[in-house]
Image (cartoon, rainbow, N blue to C red):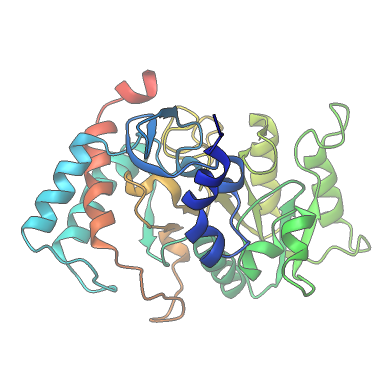
Length: 332
């Protein structure tokens, strides 16, 4: 018998190999054409089931096609609901904001306003950095070793990985990178090091507009910051006139049990960035949560064509309603 598997597989991927850019990544490790998904499983075209540990890179915290969210979305589409609204007022956004306020913000006594910057995490980070610089009049940002904040130039300047940074093809300035918790070993408190640098006028580190931190680093290797370290970093930032930005894009929305990853440390960040699973359904959606006192944006100072994804508003509201009105999900 002649083994036809190799030619058949080559043919199966022919269109991808011919037309899709070499920048693709995950497909190289998983050479399968997937056809459908449900819960924690992906199904290949031939029906083979795979347990999905990737889950949209944490954008599918509730699994593929949660029935409650799918029903809400299909009902909305069937009723000719608005698909794209820019930043116009509409019922889908109204319902999401009301649910987010009642279910997430008010129970945690968080007085944030919500900015919809565009559909990606990098866009949320860029908006947060821009606002911090506008508020403080400073340009320097403190970021940390192994941090990952996105691949656009602003977010990439705060990203640590040399491979990703090199792809920019230019210098990425405006950021001072310091060691994350534990980076120099258990004997060195890197928060004290940060404070010393910012307190010394001869350190060469300019006064920062913001300190941006992930409470749990995802792309950087699943490094977990200690509660005391996070609290010290927050206090140091404020003592030196900088804003605290928590990038909760990958660690938030239940991945550390609580809705926000910073809840256990008792932090109240000045700005929080969120994307990934905020839509609940893998639909593009990003939020920047801004302390109400710091909302100094003027109209159109930061915007994007797809900042009003009404389908994402629908599934996001339903996810909050179904999974977060009680503590049952976090407890499980």
